[in-house]
Image (tube, rainbow, N blue to C red; front, side, top):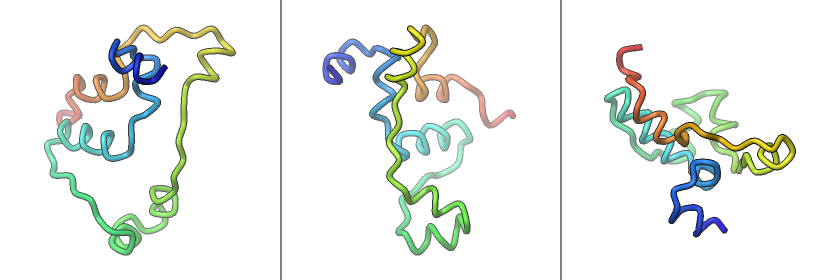
Length: 90
């Protein structure tokens, strides 16, 4: 199902498999700042208390919301939305 959704580029399901790096890269492009991977020790030093959240593997999905509320997203997926927004001007 995920492969089929990716081929169709269905915005309701493609985002479910996006990782933090995809989101960070889209934000970096929008803000016109470099993005790089850092090791866990650097992460703790850089992000301080937020690193305990950033370091967790917390997959999420909108599948349950779509099913329970019969929600059918019509807008862009997260990455497309971030890329279409002019973050640097905010």
